[in-house]
Structure formats: structure tokens, C-alpha cells
Length: 222
Image (tube, rainbow, N blue to C red):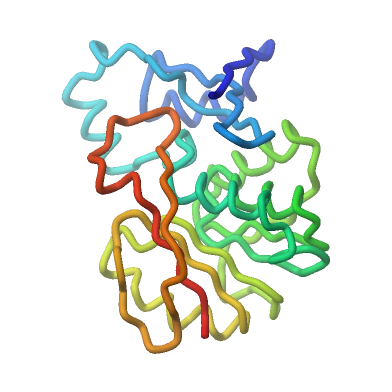
């Protein structure tokens, strides 16, 4: 079960960034299923009748990923909150942070420090706004290769493009313990990782995705 809480006003800079891609759409602070976390996300129902060809082109070319909490991010956040020992008192980096849901969960689970890493400056703005919404303190980085060595690196929903697979090796340069959650890759068969588990989760707001994308696979370094 989840609840939608409409706060007085979404952050203006996020609304502007959203309207540059999807006019007439709003942001609501929504509590995620089975977590205490709220995020600024688009409403479950928004006016799709105003999505003309130009808007659809902008969405495809410049998808604002931070306006959704993707299934793998939600599943990883739920996992960290249920099993906080994975990150408690550790320095954590959330790669491809998007909305910041995994980073926020890690901080709530007792991580010493949490770094949101994303090349998209608007995603980092969303992480800041969502951190403030949840009253947690995070750090922000726009380039993985500027990162320090950390205890744990977390990556959710970053393997959607085959071109991103090389990151599985790159992650090992920054942390000896890496967790990957992905709903689109069922087993990437990397010699340095093992598949541990699967969890059921849904992108929020619900995109009515195929059932196969509602099962999230978890991998961890050996």
C-alpha cells in the first residue's frame, strides 16, 4: 500500500526541468510502497492527451529518469531498509542515482556517508530535493572517476543498455563490495559477480510494465 501526500509546492527548479521536457505535468511528493521514503515524482495519472509528437520526441531524447522510482531502485531500497547491516557504518556510493532512492535508503539504514553519483545534473538536483524531503544528508558527485574508494557501491537499473555493461568491471576499481539490482538482465554471467536473489517490485508510479520487468535480480561481488 502507498500514499500520496501533496506538499504545498514542488521545488521550482525541478518543475522547470520537467516542463522543459513534459509540459503541464506536475510533481507530487509520494510515499513509496513498503518504505518510509517519499520522493518528488510525477503523479500516477497525468494528461497524456497533451503529449504531442514534439513532446514525445523530447521524452525519448532526454528522458528525465528521476521522475520515476524504477523497480530495481525500489527493490534495492526495500532490501537495504530490511537488512541494514549491508551498509551500516560504511561509506556508500549510489551509482546512477536518479531520484536518489537507493542513497536515501542507505542513509536511513545507518550508512556513515552516502554519495549520489550521476552524470545528469538535474538528477543530482532531484537527489538533493528528495534528501531534503526525507531529512537525510547526502553527498553528490557528477563523475564516477572522481570518486574515492568506498566500502560499498550500489547500482540499480543501470544495465538497461548493453553499452553500460563495462561498468561491471569499472565498479571494482572503487569498491571491493558491489551490489547490482536489475529487472532487465536476468543473469549477466560475470566472473566477479554472483546472482543472489530475486525480488518483486514495480516502478512507481506504475508504468504497467510487462510482468517480466517486475522481477528484480540481485547480484553481488564474489
